[in-house]
Image (tube, rainbow, N blue to C red; front, side):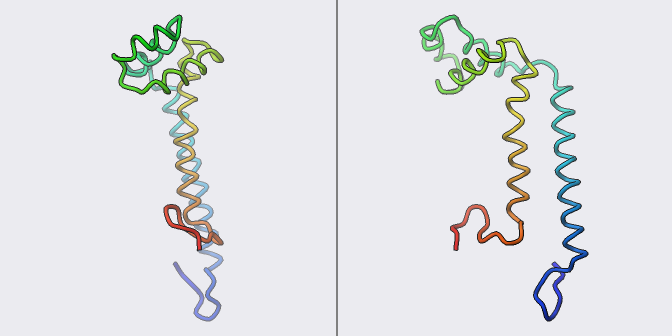
Length: 126
């Protein structure tokens, strides 16, 4: 980083460039997510299996067939509740359900280098 010799503050030009770069990168990540969400094709086999298990008619059937599933019981239960809200055959809703965590990762990366922060992620506050 470029700093003025006497003041200890960052160059205004560099500060503006960093903000522009952060906005451009964030917009690129959002565009990549939108392209992926609209052209990803059908659900993958493991995703379809989890959805099939979660939308079984009864919770007893979910429990009895859990031995064939790669996920712990919490995941099929969450999918069951989500599918009761959006419908069991709504691929776009399930894809949109997975996007916020990855977009949060982009926000986390920006938060790691915000001026005025007292600590970096993964370390104790001062």
